[in-house]
Length: 165
Image (cartoon, rainbow, N blue to C red; front, top):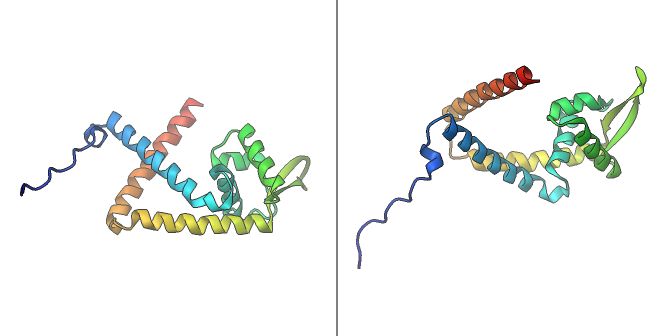
């Protein structure tokens, strides 16, 4: 019988590669995991995650009176063509409605319906549970460090986007 302790699992190269390439590789892997968890969170809703994001944004913004499509596109970081397709799907499912803008008859606002609110809240509850499951092993100070670093990184990305636009 071999009594040697098992060898530790090899460390994946992306875990030790230095920044910036290693950092961006790790961020890309985090993004893949987030996508998987997002899809898991809305699976029972029979929606795409992009559709849920629009519903959740409308619900969080308290947009019963509606938001302009351009504002909605800005909030969810989607191009106008993509938002139009998402709104079309959600409107067919009666989760949002298009309403005339009382300030400008040429404009249309997107408002969440009662059923849309229920779906958004149900999706958020599941997503919250998944987030808690994933982050359960991290200490509050670790989460704070990660949050501060990600906020700064997000600022850098947004500054870059504004400068490149």
